Length: 215
Figure 1 (cartoon, rainbow, N blue to C red):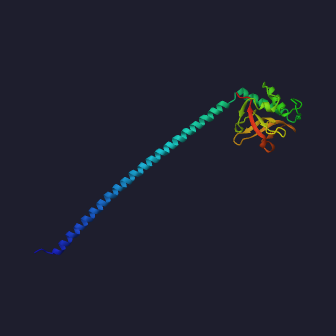
Figure 2 (cartoon, rainbow, N blue to C red):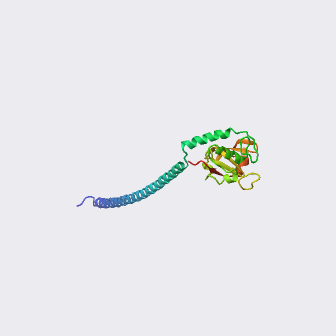
Figure 3 (cartoon, rainbow, N blue to C red):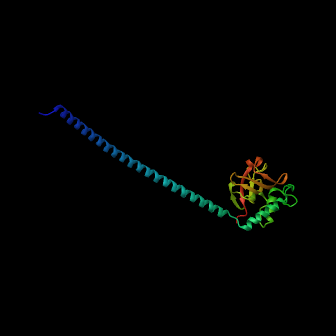
């Protein structure tokens, strides 16, 4: 006679339930692990692609910067002056400063009095450069220079009250701030030879600049 038959039946059923539950949990765990693995692989793939894209972007940026620096270096070399020219420009500014305060007289070419183009042509002539006696003609000499590339010794041109939109005034750059485009220039104004800032009256009258000393 079997003892506790109901207990045995219950235990077997309970054991089956436990085994089934364990099997389900195992499958779920395996499935979850597989999903996690897939998700991880997908994430790694995306991460790798993002890193690759970032590297390409960085490479492009590095190349662009290298090209930019190369262009800047090329421009600097192209615009570089010899030590002799640098010394001459320094002496030219010293010569120009000697005439500060000399009176303005239309058509005067110096040295007792000057008009604007008379002053620039006189100063350059002392150093072996022949400039036209008119500001309008001087604007055709040398090479064109952008306002943010000015340097000491360059000629700067403006309209005047009587020239309309044409060149009517000229001066010589004393110093330039190429970050801002501002500069100082020495010229024979109606008040005589003086150094002026690029401001006020001259702002709206600026036309351009020419470089005579290029090497």
